[in-house]
Length: 197
Image (cartoon, rainbow, N blue to C red; front, top):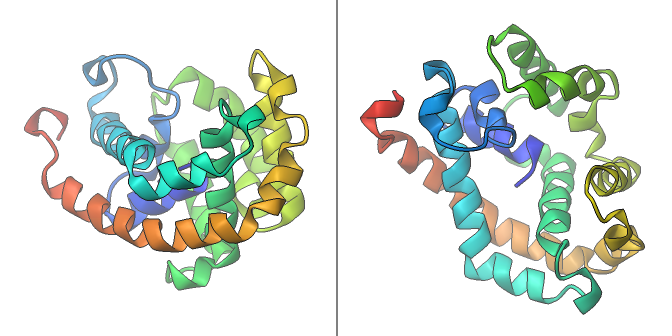
């Protein structure tokens, strides 16, 4: 899952949006981070672990061409955000525009965010990354942006076309897997280790 899905899963499980998104930028022991971020980081890691190991997502990743094996999980995460944004009204009571505004506001108001998250937040809000996932152009920009931040950007050459070709398979996998992930997120929150509360 990428940024939009993690924020959505945090919201539907009534946990901190900023803390959950921090999980993408928080490396090492959870105890290293401020108490108000720990539960969200823990939930983020549960979400990522299930996503990485679930049969539905593993089968989807196997459908990517061999040349994209290393980056297929990243492309899947970005494509899942795109589908969530496209069909947002099926998954949340707020409009996507209202939810994005809420997320940006909470992120700006939360102290002690990981430095890397603080550094990308102004650009994220200015260019409205979350809302732009709704459009194919926004998805393609996200794919290009992620590629540029990694040490081997050439691995993403042509990735936009591959994701487009697999659109039906990706949407079927998302619609099958994501409701399960929503349910798991609500269950996990009741099982958060006491040390992170």
